[in-house]
Structure formats: C-alpha cells, structure tokens
Length: 236
Ligand SMILES: Cc1cc2nc3c(=O)[nH]c(=O)nc-3n(C[C@H](O)[C@H](O)[C@H](O)COP(=O)(O)OP(=O)(O)OC[C@H]3O[C@@H](n4cnc5c(N)ncnc54)[C@H](O)[C@@H]3O)c2cc1C
Image 1: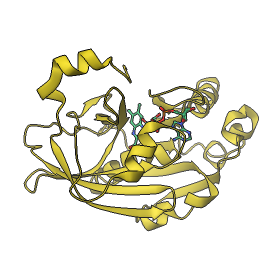
Image 2: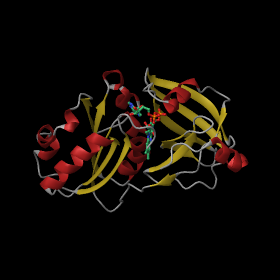
Image 3: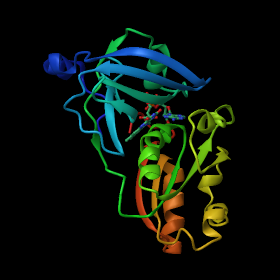
Image 4: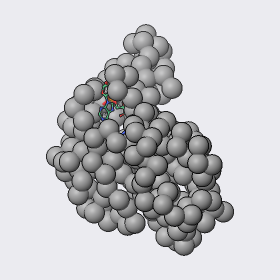
C-alpha cells in the first residue's frame, strides 16, 4: 500500500482526490479514541468486513482506516480512530471537527468474514475496534460462537464496554503478545473448543506475527491476518 504520493501526482489526479465527504459529528470515547461520523455519497461503495478506506491526511499522505458502521440510505459512516499522537494521520484526525471536508476513498482490501465458519476468534488492538464493530452484528445475527482478544493501552481499557462490545477479554499492551510462550498459555488454548475456529488477527504487526506463529505450531484453526501498523513504519 502506498502511503504517500508526490505532490505533482496528487495534482495530476486533482479532482478525483478532492474532498468528497463532510464531518457530521465527532466524539472522544476515551482520551485516545475518537469516533467520527462522516456524510457523503456512499451509494456505490461496497462495504465488506475487513475492507479499509484510504484517507487523505495531508497534501501528499494517505492512511488506511476501517468503517465501523454505515447507513447507505442516510449516506453516513463512522470510523474509530486511535489518536496515538505519533503520526500525521493521528494528528489530523485529532483536529477534525463538524463541517470539515476531506477525501475518503471507497472501501477495498481483504475480506475477513467467513459466514460458514461457526467459531470466530478475533485478535486486535485500538486500530481493530472499527473492524470489530462492523463484524459484531453479523456474528450475533448468524449465531456464531465468537470471542475478541484486545491488547489495549491502559487509557483505552474501558473502550470495548463503551462501544457495547460482547464476549471480549482486554489485555494490557505491555509486549506480552510478542511472547510465544505467554500466548501458548492463554485460555483460548487451554480447551479444544476453538480448534476449528477462524482466527482473524489484526493490529500491531509484531503481535499478529507472533500470534500467527503460535497458531501454526499448534495447528489450530484457519487464519486470516493483516498487520495494521508497525513501530517506526509510516502507513501500512
Ligand atoms: C487495513 C487497515 C485498516 C486500518 N484501520 C484502522 C482504523 O480503523 N483505525 C485506526 O486508528 N487505525 C487503523 N489502521 C491503522 C492506521 O492506518 C495506522 O496506525 C497508521 O500508521 C496511522 O497513521 P499515522 O499517520 O497516524 O502514523 P504513521 O505516520 O503511519 O506512523 C508514524 C509513527 O507512528 C507509529 N504508529 C502508527 N500507528 C500507531 C498506533 N496505532 N499506535 C502507536 N503508534 C502508531 C508508527 O509506528 C510510526 O512510528 C488500519 C490499517 C490498515 C492497514
């Protein structure tokens, strides 16, 4: 994924990258998690679980974000942003307020939802909250057995409850998900219940890679994974 394009190229694409949506309202769920509702013509957008939208965050920089909720009839959609403060995307989202206009691409990417798999296990962090919010209604509607594992900063540990999520466990973001032995000892592996589950792994690249390695070693489940961010790397 290209996270920045030269200004001359952006100018060349000119009108197609011009603001196409407006901010309707913003809300901080915690000091570092901001939910923004946008309005625009989304009638032709295809919303699939796992897809992401590219948002123009400066003249030349673009970042990926996931739609958490949408209503095509009303032309509205929500995105949940991790305001981590380390990058231009996060800083830009922090400044956004009602009536601001910006460019958001149509959704595209990896499809994560497999309706035929009864058990679904999802791992992620703050950047995965939108994915989880979009997935939960389907998991409930189709009566899947499901569970979410989140690694979250202390400041965000109440966010899953505030988003009305269910069947989740919150772990402190302290590097534990980089430790294969520690992952092996997690409750999910102390039973055979999840042996045939689909594991959807998102969030920090290193955590995703370590969790994936453990699943592979244990020959547990089917895996879909996508790292959403990596220390020291701009845009993924
Ligand atoms: C498919 C996909 C879907 C995504 N959906 C969402 C979403 O719905 N909500 C969301 O908030 N993010 C989401 N992300 C992650 C987001 O695109 C990245 O976090 C992105 O790097 C943020 O851009 P930035 O300009 O703030 O930081 P960058 O300029 O990309 O990075 C600058 C520095 O910040 C660090 N950094 C980046 N992200 C984080 C973070 N989360 N926590 C701590 N440090 C960080 C980097 O390691 C780097 O050192 C998604 C990513 C992908 C690939």
